[in-house]
Amino acid sequence: MITVKDLHKKFGDNEVLKGINCEIKPSEVVCVIGPSGSGKSTFLRCLNVLETITSGEVIVDGFNLNDKKTNINKVRTEVGMVFQQFNLFPHKTVIQNVMLAPEKVRKISSQEARERGMKLLEKVGLLEKADQYPSQLSGGQQQRVAIARALAMEPKLMLFDEPTSALDPELVGEVLEVMKQLALEGMTMVVVTHEMGFAREVADRVLFMDQGVIMEADTPENIFSNPQNERTKAFLNKVL
Amino acid sequence: MIGQFNWAGVLEFLPELGTGLYYTLLISIIGLLIGFILGAIFGLGRISRNKFYYGISSFYIEVIRGTPVLVQAIWIFFALPLITGYNMESVTAGIVVIGINSGAYIAEVVRGSVQSIDKGQVEAGRSLGLTHHQTMRYIVWPQAFKRMIPPLGNQFIISIKDTSLLSVILVPELMFQGRLIASNYFNAVEIYTTVAVFYLAITLTLSYVLRYIERRLDVQ
Ligand SMILES: Nc1ncnc2c1ncn2[C@@H]1O[C@H](COP(=O)(O)OP(=O)(O)OP(=O)(O)O)[C@@H](O)[C@H]1O
Ligand SMILES: [Mg+2]
Image 1 (cartoon, rainbow over the protein chains, first blue to last red):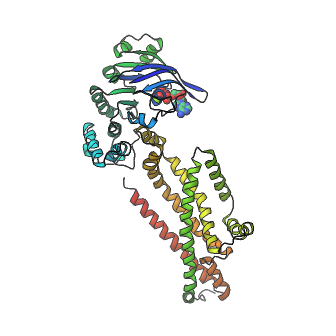
Image 2 (spheres, rainbow over the protein chains, first blue to last red):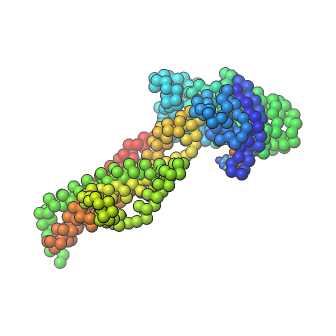
Image 3 (cartoon, chains in turn orange, yellow):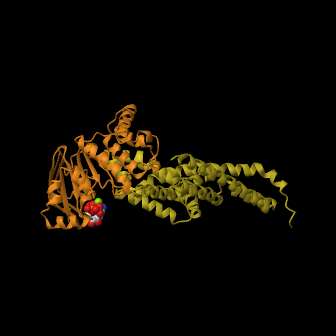
């Protein structure tokens, strides 16, 4: 599903990603952990070209993202993204948030988009909020809408950038629950997270990033119980 | 002198003042319409990555904001015909002046409002596969437009009052008519007070309408 070879990303002179290599298979759930500033968000954002790629090869669903001829909009329709700050459209109701892209990008009828949207809202447990505005919802509810909005495009791959970091602790669970469900249904997911419990329970693989490279990649059992890299050990000692 | 004013006498000049009001409104409405179009074009220029578009927009905005309306009016009405050999009627010139002048300020309003929209909104739109154009149209513009209304209303009011300066280029607007009457009949207090009330009536009505629109748009 994703192949990354020697990915480098620079902001001006600041090299943030210093040669990332990894392979993610369909239906795999990969959690990315690591200290602040290590480049986790940047890496994730390179996977749907919200950040331009400085050098290296990133292949997503068969598309070479570092090729000017690739239609990035087309790629993005297959790659859903969920942000830390939700980024719902405040001038649109919940159902309108979910319907917008399928209607405008996939060009399906308004009625079909609504039906699809309602099904997804039901799935994330927010059917009764369909006609409310985002500002009327709690953070946890907003994030679940954001997940439904991304799913409405029927993506093959979902990217999550610290989806629960902006939430009050008591609201984290409901969002993780939706994500867990998604993982069980076989969605390919890349999740940047500080929720080690989630990573341990749901991830097929955990990538530990530090200083712009993947220091260690392994199953959650191995990473959490028997980390090989000194930096991984130091990081886990701090957060666990 | 108190008590000697002849307020009833103002009624006699209502037709002239009415003509003035007509031109003030005409020039304000058409001028601001042009200003809105110019403002949208050059406001977008100021956020464009195209250097030429950006350059032209900045030049226009800086030149207009950096010179007085009065100078712009005189230049367009008296100097421009000398260069181009084409004479403009004073009312037309007045509309052009208000249009060009308000356009520069409205451009800054447009730029500010669009830039005030969180970039997470654009990222959310683009990550869903919307094109840049679709993201602007469905996500950024509707939100930016709402934020534009208060500063836009402010500019509308300033421009309406600026039309009073057009009397120097002989536009028969309210101020011009008032001055004409006052200098002939020596009733300056009554006439200028009446003129002031007319301006106030226009600007208060506008404020009210804008506040109504704002409230209607503020459904969430
Ligand atoms: N748009 C940008 N322009 C310049 N520098 C940036 C930009 N985005 C990120 N950076 C820099 O890149 C580095 C990595 O940032 P990134 O957001 O990828 O880290 P992160 O691992 O996600 O951290 P966190 O856990 O705090 O979210 C940081 O030093 C940051 O300052
Ligand atoms: Mg981050």
